[in-house]
Image 1 (cartoon, helix red, strand yellow):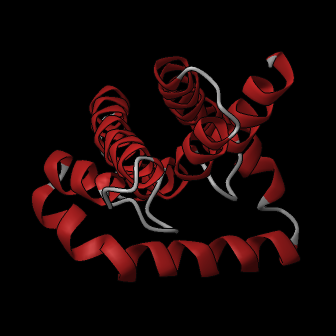
Image 2: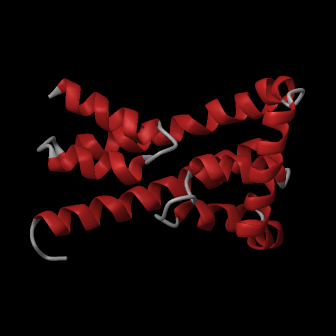
Amino acid sequence: MFQDFFIAFLWSISPFGEAKVGIPFGMLKGLNIYGVFAICFLANVLVFPLMSFFLDKINRYFLRWNFYKKSAIFIARRAKTGSGQNIEKYGFWGLMFFVMIPIPGTGVYAGSIAGHLFKIEKQKAFIANTIGIFFSSLFVWVMTLLSMKGLA
């Protein structure tokens, strides 16, 4: 049981699934549905401070390497073209709605990068990401619950 909660936590903190994968994993393993939501949501929220630290401190060091710099520029361009107009136009609300969409590429990792690129104040970006994560996680949780009951 602890191992399954831990794996759900790891899925929720990883860039390969976030809570969009952690929640269904934990629920399908038969874990407490409320515990799964709480663990996966909190794990996903934890990503923002980690990404902020990375973007502020470590990113500067890595930008000295050409391969990393080219990759970072590619990711920054994709972030700006994919969601940039809405985030730039609506700021906090655009970022929140971007993170709220429960599809791949719109989670807290992309939201952290977008907030950094568009120079949204860190506290506001954190709140926007957290609200977006909450509603995205809630949607995934409800849809998983309904699917497990055969209603969706």
